[in-house]
Image (cartoon, rainbow, N blue to C red):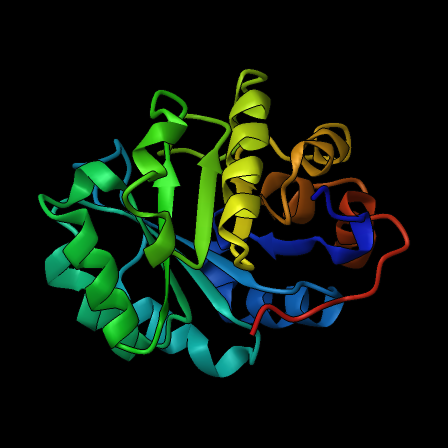
Length: 229
């Protein structure tokens, strides 16, 4: 079922915020109408960049009551699940090729009281989800190759979003279908039409032409804020 724009969650990525003032950035996007706070964790190994770790997530946690949507671009991922759970993550999303036993990793995330998510890179087929979808609360489709912000949207991922939307509907579960990469006022409506229920946006929110609130509204026209908790 294709969601209405008002039902779509907006998760601003603090990767595009001012790293010298991340606490203020989290407070500001919270007040501006963000539904979740997206935290991109990169290790310089799984992806060619290094960002933040559990200590920074813990430091940011007091700055917002919104769900922390933490995307782990690290390998191996299993040794860090507990640390990010303790730091205050609410949703923890992992890549299937970052763990030798993805099924067990998702179980471990849920056992910590978090919502497990699975991430598909542009070159990862939707079929990877078949043995895992019942264990997930979020599926994150990367519409750019992970590792850097500000990249251009890969159009072929719209077909993958459509296929995953059908897979989710078959389960009858309320699984968040999130899209990350090149999301802006032009690509957001196409992601929503394909079946996305959450959008990650970094540059479009923090570096857009308007205020933070205006930039968020541009991704989800005339829609009220809604919580993923």
